[in-house]
Figure (tube, protein in one colour):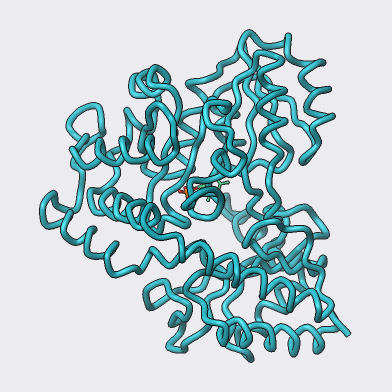
Length: 394
Ligand SMILES: *Cc1c(COP(=O)(O)O)cnc(C)c1O
């Protein structure tokens, strides 16, 4: 046995379990239709909710910023990488989110992985939602804090976990995804923030799938529940509805000040590129002026969900545009995705364990504001055909 033979064994194991996901290569920009292997296919799995990734004004803003500032930020933020455009973006985010201040990171994953270890350490405790995103889990691991997990959406269990475990930590942090990315349900944030307060724990929400989707002009989940000032830390990404790349954390001015001294992705990884910063600034400006994209997104998702449910698909219990088509069996889900792609020109990736719990494999459809009604009808009839062939619907 060679010392690297385990790699192939592991890959074969994934393939046998139906958990090996082929990675498609896109040869075009992100739009309703994309080019893959020379064919135009309908894109049903991008997080580009509002079409801003390819919006002419957003592109133009990025190009202009590159012309003015160049392509790279040149250094970590604390040495020579902080550009006026980063500061402008941070001010914009803080205002947009109605928070005291904000800090921009190079990605959402880094925002979580970088922030959580500043908030808590080994003498503290994190009370974490069962279905939290991997980047939260990584952040908690990096912090070395003790950890308790509360059941998905279950505020009685959160209270119980706080009761039992609060005293195990000097500081405590209650942390949750705002919109759950695989199911599309919305965390009961008002109750969560209140419970956190009651037990003197910090409250933290990851709004990656709420920005540009929930709240006035896409301000996100805190605005959706009118909780301004009641959630201590709000984290988000620029890579989904906002169309570009990067992440942020918003909170009090003091907290942001401390993060600039302590957060490792801020101190040890180079700054977000100027083009991305300018693109996000423009995306937020567009949202502030015009919420028609958001309305279109919600209309499209309502139509898609209702039509697929009428055909007999298991659509779960999403409350947002995230549209899971739950098949259950991983192999069958991979087969459905393959058939949709090869025979029906639908690009919709399978999502299997460990991204979702065993036995709940699914295709997660992401309708967007740039899909036309005809695009969605095309997708629905493709699901009808493939779903019947595979015996998923009758
Ligand atoms: C996508 C996502 C992230 C990571 O954001 P990136 O900017 O893509 O790194 C973090 N949290 C949640 C809930 C997400 O869905």
